[in-house]
Image (cartoon, rainbow, N blue to C red; front, side, top):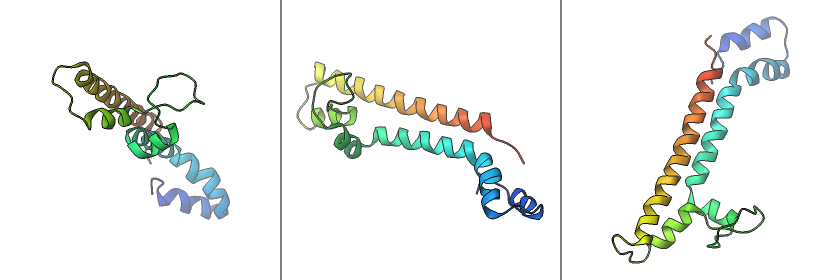
Amino acid sequence: MAVPDSLRLGAYALGATKYEVSKDIVIPTALPTIIASFILAISRAVGETMIVAMAAGSTPKLTLNPLESIQTMTGYIVQISMGDVPYGSIGYRTLFAVGSLLFLITFTLNLISRYVMRKYRRTY
């Protein structure tokens, strides 16, 4: 949808096949949109609890080894906020710290996505 029909029709008029139009016209023209959609998908996946929690293993420990199971930020928020967290306690403050960090990560990924879209967008 991001590729104008005039580009496709122009390639067909020059004798290009459907495969050549897809490979040489549509994919290069739509590449910024495709990259931005992948970045937004990763950003959304970070915010989703169940998929990331199942993939990470949901073990409440911190490690830099990607082969060991960990607990996600959203899983931590759900686990801690299920109980009674007293106002002003360390658990209360960590909920807001983790939520703020999750927001910053998602916001940064959205900014990167917008940057990619604007930098490589072509006007036809």
